[in-house]
Image (cartoon, rainbow, N blue to C red; front, side, top):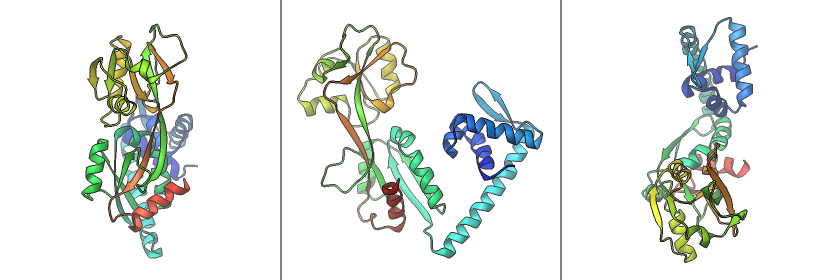
Length: 286
């Protein structure tokens, strides 16, 4: 029998164009989502999606089914909003600014849980650099921002931690299983920033170590990995940015670990907001 999760999955596949991303969005495994889609198609007796080049594209009848699925889900959401309003459950929107990697990796599980608890509150995400997060918070243009390495005196709510790791060409002569920061930074270097002010250059400055041989500077982490594969130099990146396919690369831990922390910070005066409090309480219980 088809249930609500089946219909949500159906719409997610259409929006994401891949079963894998749709499964992540609705909180299912990829294999579970594939089985659920196959069950729907079997029960309806029609093919809803065509799988082509790693994409899932709706068929003609699939588009018709999707239209009805969206109507049904929106009707259910409206029922939920009316019931929540009658019960005094908060409704509205929370504006949250963060940089791409955190929005893509650390936040989705929290956002899914928040949506389950507070379906009447929409979280509007703004993808910006860490410096821009601070600007938006100060100007009160957002309610919450993801901040890197918040100072102890600043009120913040921890999202997660990430270790910095060294990435070398696969045939680099360094033989040890770890490398110290000073040795790494002395190599011909590919500087990747990820659009953040906290990067290898700032870490070098904080440690009092010169970063003198920067061969190229890039914003995107994937660009740095490509350049390391081409043996233009070594790089230093957050572990969470490492590619799944690591051919041509050697990843080493630093002999003295260096971490970065991600935390949520409320804009001035917004911490007492009912909507912000709902989001932060979900994070604390997550």
